Length: 202
Image (cartoon, rainbow, N blue to C red; front, side, top):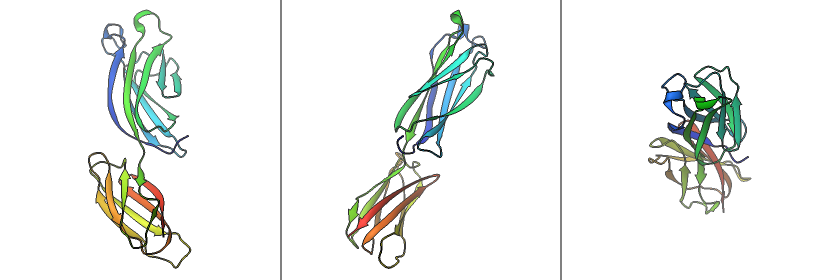
């Protein structure tokens, strides 16, 4: 699996097949929404909520490499949670009824975006020389902080930190200056998101 991804936002639920005339309940089309959160592994837990479905039909949920079936007998509205691999970008959940005869077949979809909060900076910098640390895929228009902690073999050093505010795309920048040679661990925090990296000072 790839690194942990955070799912952010729902880009709407839309009907892509079936007709309300044969829907269950009558004249109400089946719909779906999806939201995900990081799990304890390197994947994400995706929760898919299906509304106005036919309890007499199996429900097939397809997203990325996962195909998940909910057996008939489910409520008209229900939520199923399962793990998906973490792939940054926009994704679509396909939902359809199976095992139904004739015009009882319905299709719906929901779109969501997977983001990967991370730090972007140089791998090596010079002692007491300013450099830029960029955070990406953090909460938009929100405050964040970056703290550098010395992990080198020299004398203990005071942590160095700076803070800022991300833009509408969840990107933010701060400037740091580190006073000792060796490795420093970077830890960025913004809202419920965080990321780590390492920089070497020479």
